[in-house]
Each structure stands twice: as C-alpha cells, then as structure tokens.
Length: 299
Image (cartoon, rainbow, N blue to C red):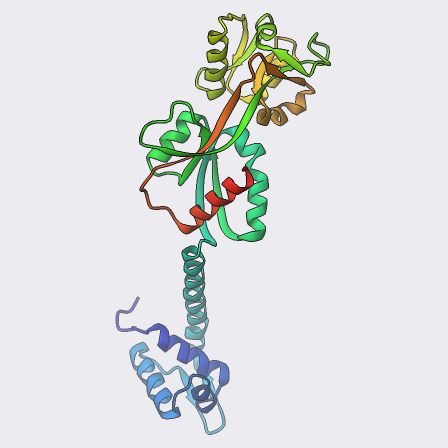
C-alpha cells in the first residue's frame, strides 16, 4: 500500500456521502457541515490519495475512476468497522461472542442441544464452540484456558478448579429385550454383578463410578467386554455379550440398538454433573450469560 494514502474513517464517510448524494451542498447538510468545509475535506483527501476523486460541474458531482474504486473499497471498510463495533457492543453486554465449552459426550449430545437452541433465540450472536471429550481431557482444556468452562462430573477435580452443581444423573442397567431383566423397573447392583458386564474404558468417568460401586458392595462381576465409545457399548450389549451400567443421559445415545433399561438400586447411584471453572479467571460477558442459562435450565 502507498504510505502516502492516509485516509481516516471520517474521510471515507465524507467521500461516501458526497458520492451518494452527488452534491456537495446536499452532502454537507446531511453531515452537518458547511459546504466549504466539506469541499476542503474532500480536497485534502484527494491530495492524500494523489488523484481526483470527483468530477465537479455546476449541476452534479460524479466520481472519477479512482473515486469509484475508493467508494467500492471504502464502503466495505466502513461496513466492516461498524460491524465490528456492533459485535463489540454485543460482547460487552453479554449478547455476542464465542463461548467455548468442554463437555462429556453424553452431555454434549443430550443436554446441550436444547440450550443451544434456546440461546439461538434469546442471544443469536452468541456462538457456542462445544468440545465433547472425556472428563480428564475437559479438565486439562479448562486449566490451559482452551475453554471457558467444562461440564463434567465432580469426582477427581483438581483443587485449582471451582464448581457449580448442575444436576444429577442416575445409573440404569442396560440390556437386550430378551434378557431376564426385561420388564423390570428396577435392578439391584447385586443382580447386575451376576451378569457378564460390558464396561466403559478405564479412562471414562462412568467406569470409575461403576467400579467404585461394585467395590463398595464387595461385588466382583465378570467383565465380558470393554469399550470407550457409548455406541460401541450399546452394540456389544445388543450383540448379547452382556449387560451394562449407564446414566440416564447416556441412554438416548444407545437407542439405536433397541435396548431396554431399568433403574439400578440398592443403592441408587447418581453422577453429579457440575459446571467447572477457574476461580478468578476473567471470562467474557457472553460466557457468563451462557453459564447463567445453563444453571437456570438445569435447576
């Protein structure tokens, strides 16, 4: 770019006004300037550009070739500037911006879509960037500032994080329709332990909860298979390899396999879902607005 071309936003707006009105007199009235002051401003802009921008006659003002190109580029620059200011105002007021959330896959698939849809109506300029991942990865992303907050379980969170409780998610037994459990509303953990278990991988927060429950009850079920992905767990159960334990929010992700479920009791076991964040870290007004929406929606 030629360093001698140094036009301000005000210069561009005055030039665009003259080009639109095709009259210095009418343009001057529109921008609340005297005609002579507007003419001097345009003359100075022409000096900085190094070319005439308008052909002036007694009847009209027409942009030159350079003027037309400047009007084309200047219109885009002014619009970009004004759009940026509008976005800044929305960001300042918590109504716009990108909010990054790390969430467990079951939460990202079942809980968040309705909240995203709600925000699309109430705050259409807020964009949610959702990373569905395992609990320990969500914690890492939160600590390294890659996300604004994480929706996860409250077990094993490091001391650097604070949390706000969101909701509870009760465990259920999952089985085929031809399994002896079919038709029951409840299944005990002891009954479950007598069946081959299709379990989540050791990195899963669900595996930690089921293992802890079996250990507390001094039960040692036989493990039939292990997988990390929810859909794979459902497929293995549907194939008749065993039964599984999964929270209620996970069950919709298994529906494709045509499985049945029953509440696990004696005892009932819930995973506590929380909104985790780094206390004292500054977050955007939009992120604060999303956090409030989450707490309200899941209260």
